Image (cartoon, rainbow, N blue to C red; front, side, top):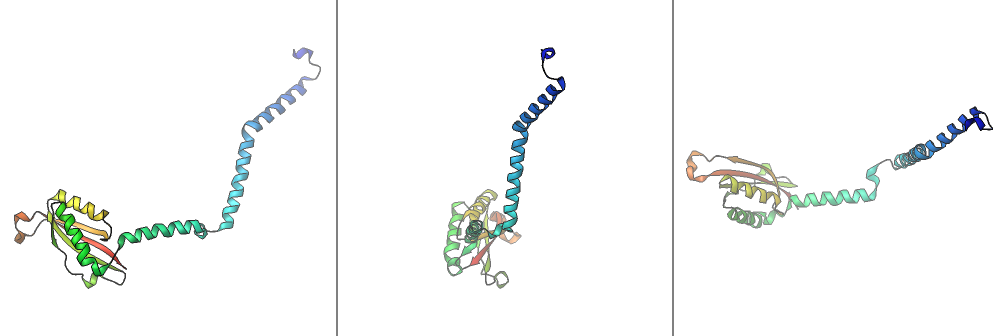
Length: 173
């Protein structure tokens, strides 16, 4: 068949190379070049915006998330000693733990914006652990700042069980 071809074989080679180049462009290079152009356009748009925080949608979402986090910490300090501590004592009773004490707020643990309240509980380890989980999930009682399990002192007697000291951080309204 190639013997009866009216053109030179070199022209046939050039034609095959051109056809393969066009096919390669259509199949692979065209999409890559279009993606590269789109990338350049997006990079230019990003450079014009300068800062992601300038976007009002982003700022609104960020403020809404921060407000949700702050409401977890917030409690009314006037009614905290009565309502919240009663609620916490009921939680302790439901979990077979004993509410031992809630000493008055220490001035070292109080500022204009927050207050730290110490609460003490006694009971077995698993009931105290359940209570701790419920305290962490409860709203309006403040956020759990720290906790410590400890053995009772000698004067408390052997029937006291394990003691749990909890520090709750409350944001003052």
